[in-house]
Length: 603
Image (cartoon, rainbow, N blue to C red):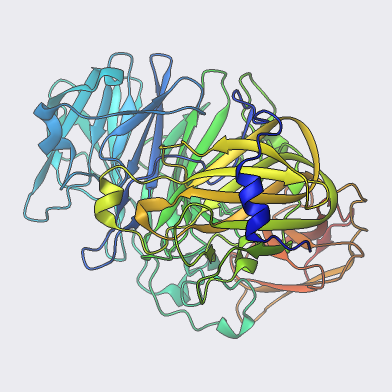
């Protein structure tokens, strides 16, 4: 690794080689999506943290509207799902729409004339909650139009001129549904129906996805936890869409404090009764990789008739409810089975602006080049080593000792590689909340590349940036060949120290994809059928594995990503009793994915 002294740094800061290489009209995005996430906490005693969760996207009058928990206190509008503009509620409805400047888990839906919004009223003393609506949400003009009983995690479905509210949250609340009178937007007396009763004993659940791994948070291989789950799951976030003649009701489980946070789907041919849990659940799961979790989601259709899901992704460092948002394509097969395409879903993904086949997802085919890369830094705060900046883990980070202009970190990719995109995930370290609220919630920097670690050229100059950019994603205009990257600080978040969760580099490593995985076998744990042990022979050239499984050889809709080419097993805990499963294991590295080619039935 080249050594970078301060004399070289001074020369670097004066460098003006090359123009900006970043595509200002990108066709890809990268989860977690880069938004100006607000700051807050779910529990008053927890410290503030950058967060957003429980998202809803609604398409109304040719625009997309995004609403999310504990975020900016308003909402966002977009023409393309890529570029978002903030909008805020007018003063006349602020009391009806907000609790202390923000809202939680809102119900949002649209008919031909209005968008409707219902908050989760956090004030337990209040027995009702107002419904507000807008014919011009892009202008922030809303009015109160109705009132319903206070309910938790509400969701609104408008279908055939009828208005249904779904609700339920926690270990002692069932998922229920009631209907509104469209003339008064009030609850029709006697219309409430029980759709799913709450869970009272996690060890009696048929499905393992209800208990997750909250006790050990990051761990995905821990067979010693079999049968030791005591926390009750927290079914929440009901969301309903209709496709054809089928109603799909999703809810999240086991609770947001886990990478195993996922969505389960039930189906019915009516909107308010007869829902049955599908055997291919969970329908939305994102475990492994840079960031995990895909629960408490909203499924919606875009202007091109594509289905998408906007979902909650978990960080959980500064407080347990520190979260982000992820966007994934949704596919319905010929049998009507629903699948959210989250595999490798934190790599660059194509934002299609036309109708596309979502059966294979939307990954751009640009692989992680930076995992395990050797990094150096101008300084390092104890406990936050620079190796964290390349470990593909959103929950760790490097921090410099200061936030001074000129603090820097470098990355050596090991050899020259073809770079297509870069994601700079900046860390919050020792920030001043007053400065954050005063407008200093951003990182300003310059990013350089080099072939030899001595002569540097500019990738992009963001030294004058003043926009929040916690997950700054840069799609390059053209493929770039480089071995070294360097990011130089000009302004750290909220007057704190300069920090990087991960400097993620995407493209192609210039080599071969790994060999095929062999020796795959899966053994169901007969004492508790919610578990299975999957084993395989490590593949030459692999940096990790995709363990895929499902209820049929041609329907492997579940994926758990396992990092580390030397890994050879995974204990799966999210299976359903009485359901038979099939398995395969694919290998991946910085040059691509090699499918196993063999699907095995469990023993």
